[in-house]
Length: 377
Image (cartoon, rainbow, N blue to C red; front, top):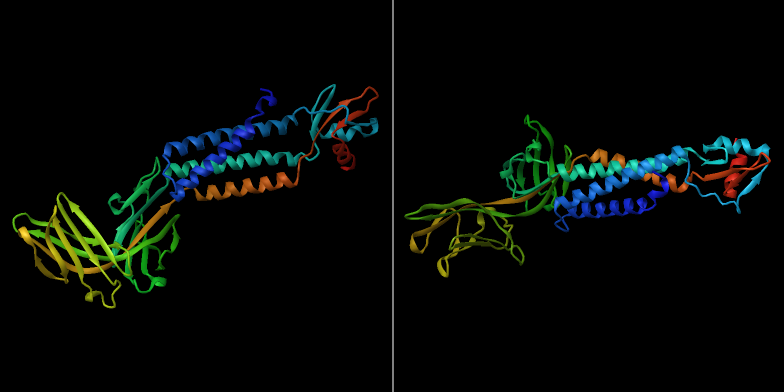
């Protein structure tokens, strides 16, 4: 295949790399919900065109630059100066040849496109193998990250599984009135040994074992029980309450069939966690079964045989993990790509072409190439 047939390849390679970079950024930031197949397809196209560009650049490095000799602008030199020209040529025949003033600089495009292939490979593997999820955790509790039921929401790559995250997260004290030291935490490995522990501030993230552990929510959680005199216990678990507008207002609404349970607290965090009360409304369709303020550890009868008990209020934090794989490959490949691009721009290889003259001399194009060749030792 002649190199001239590769004319549109650079634009295609740059365009596909740009599209993949945008798509990957949208996926990682969750700005736009792109299907994984779209991202993988763009990555495959970008990788294929980048690999083709690396091959194209390597062929040019081996064969010399594509033909661009301009006889009218070429500089003529006598037989005494032709040795430098012929010695620097990569391609020679009876009529002339071509080469680079700086052969080593001609390798920069090859290295740059190879670095791009490495970045794309890491990005493609990242899309396929990443694991990201969030969950709710109460004070003095633990969670296993390798269990799907741990997560409130979970986003996995095409080939990923949460069982790869063989870690546990323990949360100690939660201090909602001290956001700069919101929670104490430990991250344990599969053997139970702590691999990271410390204090996490509100909105802060920390890196551990290739994962980013971050805090994204905070609020009160109320352990609530709903019972019925004939049906027994209908509900019995902590309910995390979410900001509901206004200073310190948190609420949540649960639904099951026609039943609707709304819980709200105001003025949280309270000076004393035991001092807070909750406003509870229980409905069966349009009928209000209960509405009022409830105190912890008291039974409140409701209509139609229902009853409500609030046991305790415990603060919770929302935690999340982002396990993005092949980070070292990404960083190393990106460093190679950027370095090669900078050197490619600052230190050009300076291609040249020459033609044999009847008197034993040569004609060299472009003129500045001959000036550089004539002074090189």
